[in-house]
Image 1 (cartoon, rainbow, N blue to C red):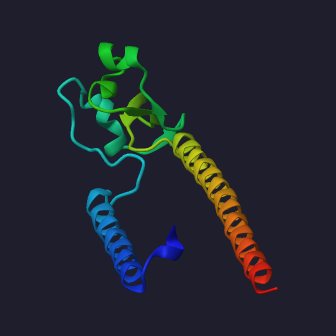
Image 2 (cartoon, rainbow, N blue to C red):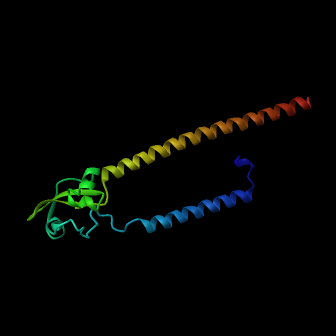
Image 3 (spheres, helix red, strand yellow):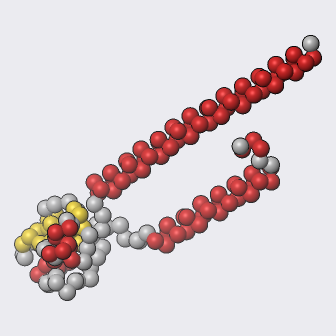
Length: 155
């Protein structure tokens, strides 16, 4: 497999991988938001009243972490922020009371995605390691057979 590749092919392959990595970094940099706060959406949806936007003007107390909106909440637009956002957070405005606001990320969901990714990568790494060890064993066996043939032919 890789041992049959010439030096020129290996250099070209490495250059392609480096170029692909740089391209991925550039695309990722362009696509990720600059603001990582959990409530970056400040534009009002037509169904959201000014009272529900109190978190922009008043001091707030976070009552819940950011949670994904359920399918029912999205279809019924209850709370109103679920009509325009995938995630909601319950907050208590000091004057207005309890309202929901949009949020961009759910910490526990991101952690779950991270650990799922890590588990998949560990599994792929383990399988790749086993394949490498099996391939090395096959190559070592071929070398031993070749040496045995040479010794048998020379004796």
